[in-house]
Amino acid sequence: MSMKNTTKQKPETNLNINSASTLDLIAEQWYPICLSASLKNKPQSLRRLGQDLVLWRDESGAACCAPAACPHRGADLGMGRIENGELQCKYHGFCFDRNGRCTKTPCEGSRAEIPNSLDLQMIPVEEKDDFIWFYYGKNKNRPQIPHIKGITGGWRDALTCEFTWDISLSRVMEGMMDLHHLPFAHRPWFPPGWTRLDPYKVRVEDGVIYTRGILRKEEEKGGIKAFMNVGFPSLLHIAMGNGADIDDDTISGFEMLGTCTPIDQHRTWIAVYYRQSYVRIPLFDRLFNLIALQFDLKLIQPDDYRLLKSSSPSSSGSGSSHLVRADRGIAEWHRLQKKALESNCLQNAETEIQKTG
Ligand code: FES
Ligand SMILES: [Fe+2]
Image 1 (spheres, helix red, strand yellow):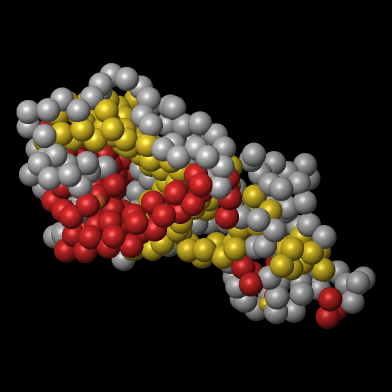
Image 2 (cartoon, helix red, strand yellow):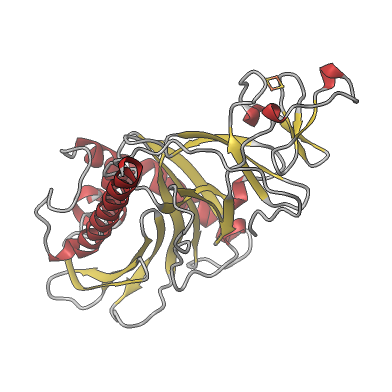
């Protein structure tokens, strides 16, 4: 579902994008900024990619996005409500339609002429694969939203969890794509001796990194089988279960569709849909899922957080670590990161030359 307006579109707001993007705020990319399941009938304010935004759904259910500060006197519009399909500011009740037009200023009476200066500068967003997506960049000529093959729908009914880590995107993505850390970083919780990641296959297609591997004992064939796929830079699809056949495209076990989106250079918002296929009995499946998710959040993630937080430097780019074969997925992420940063630098330089020339 994309934000399609039937009336005239208001001009887009000028986003605050650094001319030299950092290792972690990679410009000219699509980022998921909200789980579709989390945006219901209340507006939400959120900070993503250094911008304070408000998201809400109009009468048709389409996602709408604008800067969070009310044009009147700056209150956070995420504290407001939806009134007759319009966003109403909590402070003085000014209302805004899906195009950002300010339609009501109650203190001035119903016949008041409302100046355009009170309109919101809308930010286009798209809804795809159960996320609301935001384009961080200035280019009108935008690439496609990344799509990971094999993602099936129906995630809105899955369990969700969201949290923030004060860790850069590059380090968080390294952590998310890492399978061979499991027996060491999460020592008490994984079978001892399952330390070898082999076979391990990586391929990159249309900006998506597909990795699959089996983590096993030295002399055994089977072990923990996992797919870890990344729609560069932020979209994440992980499936994990038991297996011995790397070429079998199915895994029974835990599955997660998520995102790691920068809030700013040093903080990352992590949001996931989470489900499992071990237990399929109604109600019990949800209970099992809930327990598994709590296990992950309470016993696994804190170790990951501490290790990533301890990593130096706090941001990473290609060449900043000495990677091994089992890190190849991470190497591919850094390769795409480098390519995107170089292309942005080139575009910025061309814009500067045009300005001065
Ligand atoms: S600050 Fe929003 S209506 Fe006054
Ligand atoms: Fe981990």
